[in-house]
Length: 478
Image (cartoon, rainbow, N blue to C red):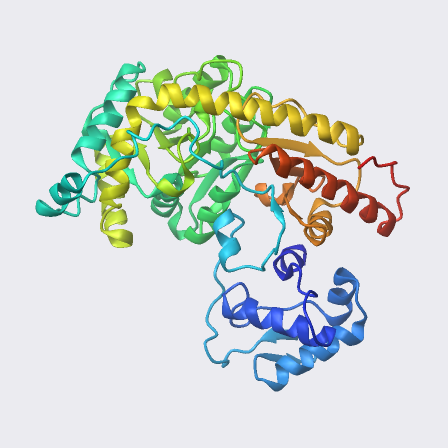
C-alpha cells in the first residue's frame, strides 16, 4: 500500500474531477510498468483512507478504468489490472533510485533531497575536460567495442589500486556504465534463480533495486557503528546457502558509518571460510570529512574473495557514468559476458574523459569533502532550529544525513513532504525487510539556498503531518 501511494505521488494536482485525476495517474502507472498484468489494487476503502479522499472518488476512478478495460473486478478477489489490456505486460520492479523520476510522477518545483547528484564541476579543471577532435578520431579510427573497457583506462584504474597498496593488474578490471551497472551485473550473476544475497540493513536502495530485478532473495543483517555485525554474518553464512555478501565498508549508505579495521578482518575471514564472495561498494569511500579513506576491503585478505566496486559519479559528475569492478580475472571474464549482452561496451568518450580525470582525483576529493562538510553543517543547523524533534548521528562523510523522526511513518510523511515541494527517501526503501519506517535519508548536496528552502518546506510539512496524525506539533520557526 505504501509503495503504491508513493508512486501515485501528487496525483491530485491538475484540473478536472478528482476521480478522473486519480484514474489518469493509475493509467500512467500501468503504462510505465509499475502496475502490471494481474497486479492487485487495494480495496476502495483502503485506498481512500490512504489517500485521505472519499471512498466515492476511488469507486469512480476504478469504475472508469474498468469501463476502459484496464481493470477487472471479481467478487472475493478484489480489483486487478486486466490480463488482456492493450500494452499491459508484467510489472517492472519498482525502483527508488533517482533516475526513476523520469518515468514517475512529476514533482513540479520540488527540491530533491532523495538523491546524491552533486551539482556543478567544482575542482575539475577545463584542461581535464578537454577532448580534441584528434582524440575522438583516434577512437573512431581503430574502433573496437572493448566490452571490458578501454585498455588504457583499465590500466590506469589498476595502477591507482596498486599505488594505494592493493596490487592490481588490468586483467582484474571491468569498466562499467556507472557503479549501478557494476552492482547489477554482480547481482544478476549471483542472484539468479532466487539466489540469496546478504546485505546490510539498512543498505543502498539501488542495490535493493538490482536484487529485485535479478529475482534474488535478499537477507538484511543489522549494522552498528563499526559496520556489519560479525555474529549476525557468521550465523547467516551457517544457516543459508548465501551466494554473495554486499557491504559498503567505508561511508556506508545511508548511515555514513565506517567499518572498523577489526570488523573488516572478521568479515573477510568469515566469507573466505564459507567460500562466499564479498562485494565492497566504494563509491562513497573518498568522501570522508575528517580522515583519509581506509584501504578497500580487498586489502585485508589474500583469499581473492573480495570484489571491489568503484565509480567516478560522486567525485566527478553523476552524468559521466563510468564505474568499474575489481575482481579475480576469472570472475571478470564471466561478468564481461553478461555486460556484452546489455550494452556491448561502455561509451568510449566517457571512458576517455574518465582517463583524463583520474590523475586529479586526489585534489578533487579535497574539494568535494570540504564542500560536503560545509553543507552538512548548514543542514544540521537548519534542522536543529526548525525540526528540533528530529535526531541523527553526525555522519563520518558522504552526502547523506540519516534522520530519525520522533513518531509517524516516514513513508506517509514523504508524501506530505512532496506535497510541500520536497522529495525525500523514506527509510524503509533502504531496508530489505521494510524496517526503519521512522527514518529518512536526506541528501545535503544541493546549493545552500536550496537547502534553506528545502528545510523550511520540510518544517511546514511536518507541522501539517503532526496535526493530521493527531500529534501536538512542536512550535516551528521558519
